[in-house]
Length: 260
Image (cartoon, one colour):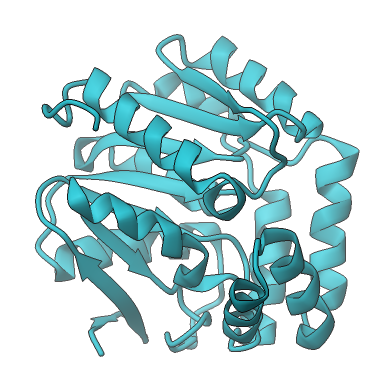
């Protein structure tokens, strides 16, 4: 099993394909398993999936968890694998780490992709989701059922996702929710001068106003609403997600081959 040894943490990762590196950042609890359908992109790119500290097969370390620490982990992960620049893709709260890294290390980001991302938690529905995550962090049996059930399309996928979620360190999980709920980068968004793609689901209504926030703050942002889906785009609408990502990277000339 491949591991990257970062400061006070051993990070499990998968590295497949060749070409432009795509690095995916998962939300609390899910680990790299949530991106199993994005492995199809290895036909075109080098796809890197990893478990953040305290998730899946990665160790927790002994540092106090913060969004900044997880962004530092991403920088150190890239250094360990000798990756100078990459497309950074954050799903849900994974987008907070992606944004924190991109804002502070734009020279290392080819493009930033946020799937159901947000610059801060400022609506009651998302706030309730974070509070539920905090309250259930030490009840992984219940939380893993809820998260896996919402993401899985088949019984087999449900079992895989649920099993992986239950490997999470409960304290790391709790702190990820706590720090993610408080994170904000709204004032720094105008400083982003890199290609930005934001995707959300047609029925994920409480995420729609976040797209408006990005459109106002980052004029070059491209927004996509995936039809007939909610928030769980990487698994529930993986074909649309992968196609939108490939189209975006082709359009900014980060990927030169035609879409097939």
